[in-house]
Image (cartoon, rainbow, N blue to C red; front, side, top):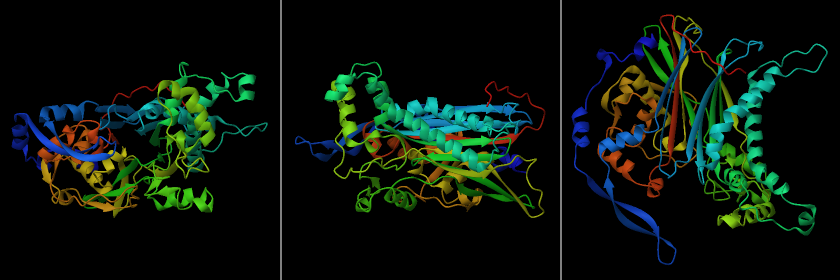
Length: 511
């Protein structure tokens, strides 16, 4: 069975490469040269070479694990839900964020008992302001919308609860994203309206609110931006929903086992990278604007030639009308020496960006649910959510193989050509890439040694078994690191059944 396959037993463990790690751990400090882009005396960008210290492997280990978390919770029926999360910054401060929650269904819910599990990663840009707000509010917004759906009645004399279907739940998740973004975008306007009298409105006098306590608190989350990716597990109905706004990606590993006990991992991509390079997104945006903007709404794969994700929270520069941007900038930002940049010349019919996500639905199962067939059984066994910093370096197939190998118990340094033989994979739904294709990277090796699955993936994205490459990439400081790697946040979710009668964790939050 798969559970036995996951156990890291000696017979299936591969251990090689340890001496090299010991060598580099105690190696003396070194330096390396790196081409970087700087501003010349005339303000134009020029390339130059700068020398940086090469961090020791012990410092690299600290940075890989500094923001790592491992959590496990056991629910009725003996299901142990496990998730690992880790983040590594390229920007200073880190612009990524993440959040998770588990909420039990209220007993008044006709589908109870069961839980809702929420996992999110946020990829901020233009600062950490939007992603930080989302990490505190997005799950609550979706949970509130689901609660309204579940407990809504038809309004008749004998009301009946709304039927919970994949369609109604998907629409509820979409609505929560859209409403929350509207709150972010409209917040500065509400502050301005509450601080203008009739005379100021009549004479079009813009007050200086730069020192208002809500000035930057409302403006910065609106004008910076963030992609958001959420997975919602409904254990009562064995459904998983993935909501994607932006170019983060979710993938699943589907274990397919034969009657003989052999098996492989099928790669299922649960979201599309939403950038201007995605044909579906290009078509959508062009359809939302006049025909004379067809060639300008997306340029070089970016919205108006600037923003890469086509869906995001915040990013008010692509949503507010030009006149409103000028007023809000004058009211809140000019006095703080942070005026908004002028809109592009092709900016004509906003909004150009939406936070409304694409929601996909899939089934998952526990072992007792699995179909008993004489030929083959397959079941979703893990989900990976990650910001684009991971997908810039690894393919969906590589991530499934790396997680599958870790769960199998592989350890040590394994060549990239050897892993497919140890961890067979097959292709399910294809990846819709949001950027230029990654260069072929079949040379080199992977490293299996981290307990935390998310750290394991980030390490292998940044060098894996190639320790000099890992040290060099991780040693590049901000702001220069951004040219070579991005902020990277990864959450891996999986579950298994306890053999004995385990103590369950009580959940206080109800939906």
